[in-house]
Amino acid sequence: MLPKEINLHPSSDMLLKYSMGNTTEAESLIISCHIAYCAECKEELKKYETLGGYYLSNHKELSVSKDLWKNILERVDGLDQEQYQANYTSHSIKSNLSHSDIKIPSTLSGYLGPDFDTKNWKSSINNIKYKDIKFQDRNISGKLLEIPANKSMPKHGHEALEATLVLYGGYCDEKGDYNKGDLVVASCDEVHSPVSASSGCICLVVYSGSLQFKGLLGSILNLTKF
Amino acid sequence: MQLNLKSFNSNTAMKSRNIKADTFSADTNDDLTLCVELIGKNQDKLAFNTIFKYFAPRLKSFLVKAGSTDTQAEEVIQEVMIAVWTKSSTYDSNKSSVSTWIYTIARNKRIDKIRKEKRHYLSESDEGLEIPVDSTQEKEIFTAQVSNSLKKYMSNLPEEQSKLLKLSYFYNKTHADISAELKIPLGTVKSRIRLALTKMRHLVEVN
Image (cartoon, rainbow over all chains, first blue to last red; front, side, top):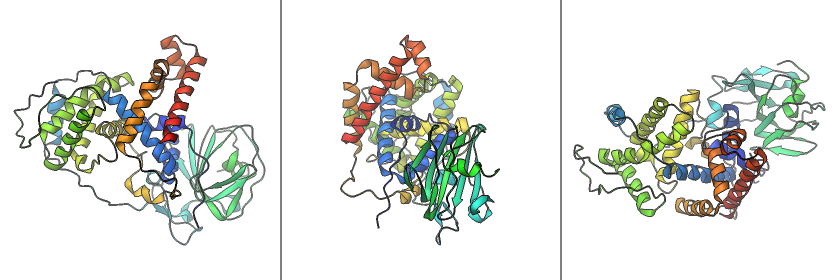
């Protein structure tokens, strides 16, 4: 069976900002994770990076200090070529939801520390497991959630920014189904009552503010204190 | 730009010709590609210097315009050049032009300086995560094709939109700052950027 199609993507505006290195840390993380699953956005990104190269190559010049070249030569002295190796590190997490480990994007694994087994994550209601993701900007937070199969969360709706990326399985609400790779941005004026898929769901959620939440995380947060 | 590199004991047959600023001209592109290949194969310092002379002043000008101090800009340039030196053998001219390759290195090094830690751009090991696209939709994109369609897009884009696109994304200026700097109403800034983006999106889809 073919995997389900990705329906929800970052906007061109966000991808262009990302390609130029101008998204925030949390945005960069969730966009890079989406791109890991999405060939379409990977292709779009490549074009924006080409635009960056075009701007750079056509850029006016500013003279550099006299010592710069000398300093660079000193630093490369003795440095060898790094040979290209397909020396892939396995970025995966152990989860109750799958017999085999679940692969995650490399950019996310850097945030996990030693917690690659969801058994060691914190516990919340409905047997939901979660792992906090910390960013330099303390106004933005992230969580990795592992939600067992077919769990429904109560209806809720609040104001705050919240973006969810599905890494495994999926969930649905009144507006649709969300599957692996989908980037779901919750808008402020909607009410959701999400239900996890029959395979369960592992997702990355980033959110700002410390008040109230909506979307997938909101329904969990409203019932429990993390 | 004159090359004066006799002090480097280069054993390559590379012509030390001037590399002009007319980007995406086949000659410039070929010269830069050749240079990176020579660095990768022979650690050729003449070629390395050519890359430095072409990119360092452009990178500096860009980084300063995007908000770095002179010192910060030159620190980033050092990191970029060291990456060029050590990673040239991994450069693949089918995947990107040298300008794009160096641009992405500079972008990553600039962010490393700000965040001093985690990577936010994917590694080769992420290839396996991708959800396969239906084969009829699968498109082979060649570097030259992308460059050509981009060049066409840029030359057809009205000056007023082109300028705002660059200020907004390349230099990361806010719409309010652009509005103040160019003395254009905020609404006009937004609508022009939106127009430029729509055309860009179209370019993406056409390919």
